[in-house]
Amino acid sequence: MGRGRRHRGWGITLACYPLRSRCVLFSSGQAKTYKRTWDRKEDITKVDTATKLSTERFAEGMTIQQFRDNMQKNREIYDDNYQNFKLKPEDQAFFKSFGKKLNVMVLAEDWCGDVLRYLPIFQQIAETVPNWEVRVFLRDENTDLADLCLKEGKYRAIPVIKFLDENMGEMSCFIERPMAVYEAEKSMGSLFAAKYPEIADALAPVDEMSEETRPLYTQFAREFRAESRRAWQQLFVEDIKNRVGTSS
Picture 1 (cartoon, helix red, strand yellow):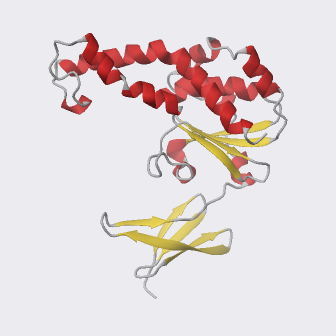
Picture 2: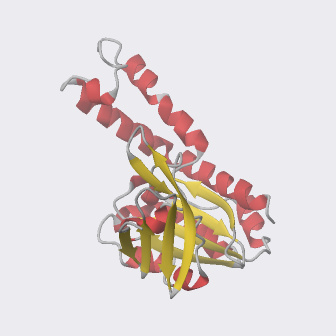
């Protein structure tokens, strides 16, 4: 048998053997074998480990308040979103009456705009629900956890809010932003072009805009997101309600 490539992290060794279809995961003295698949077109090795978050690993995470207190940047933006958004009475009633115990894994970073926009709202929700245990992990230090919940199966987008039952079985996973927000952001280009009909490349992709147009579009997008913030945060609340409502 040929020498295997070994990848280490979090006390785990993943050994992949050339010309074989198996990888072996060594953890805590135990070896588990997983299927290995090859994407020859892009020359990429993909390993489906079907990893399940353990209760021990989950317990290593921070509370949301600890994440906030340890932020190195943008804390004032986080606090502004937390203090200036209030759950509607009907939303408070929904979450207060939610009786099922859940574990919730969150992936975040303090530089991410979507984290700053939505995690403070989720903190309010978590403080309202009586039976949720929430733990936050830094995405960049826990890429193995990020790989459990990828946007479109390939992007480590954040925030990730992964809902798990009492036995750490996955129930649902929120990634980045509500679907309705994606749709709203798609309209920015046409709205920008309508505001500046005299700009020839107003509808061009951002990376193809001229040096004169790109700053105008960047400022327009910043203002559009700021004006939409409260509405998008309410869409986030509705998204979370829909996710957990089917499991209550």
